Image (cartoon, rainbow, N blue to C red; front, side, top):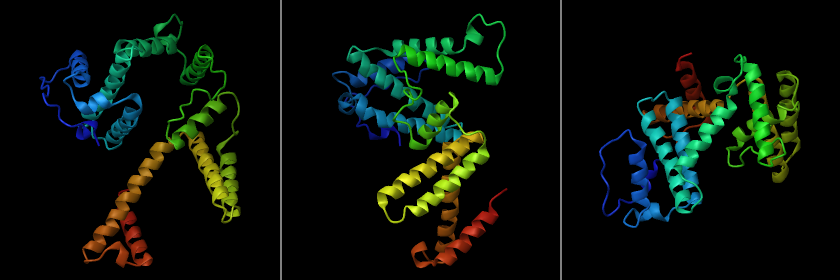
Length: 276
């Protein structure tokens, strides 16, 4: 769902010609936030816009996952607009402007790629570059007075993604399992503890959390993106369940009127019909 769909039309809408110049987009944002702009846009704050920013990032990811490259420019534009929106609000508050945003990322990319933009004699291999990257980030945390290894892992990340990042950061200082087999043993242990939690809802939640954390750790050891893996499984589940609904609808029935055995048979049929 796009931000534009929720925004009421301004009384004097600006209808610029399509442009490749970001200056036009910045001017549109200034107009929307201006005295004669859109009441909805003018009422927003960092806090109210942040959820839309996250949503638009997921829209970009969804287009890539679906290989919908025709839609991708539009989704990237929506995400870019979020950056412009935040930068404009910051400029109004005297905090920073879009130029500071661009300067910050430009400086960061140059700083984090000394083997490309610096005086390094040779470009490192992938593993060496990964280690150098972690060292650079550690120095950046020190510069920000973030002394803990986990200090700059954002709290706002989706829980599964944050779990993987926390584990990766801890592993960078040697706090990690030796191999994936040990993580699988840990998953089995955590699964048993879920059973042992009995009917205590608080304990159940804690143990389920431990189990999910261990599964995220296994994904990391196997070089699998846990978010991408779960999104793919969600899509697979949706596809197969829709097959169940469609097959039942063809008979004038609904899932509510079917038995679990019937739905399981249709599920297996959907599974067998999928390309391998």
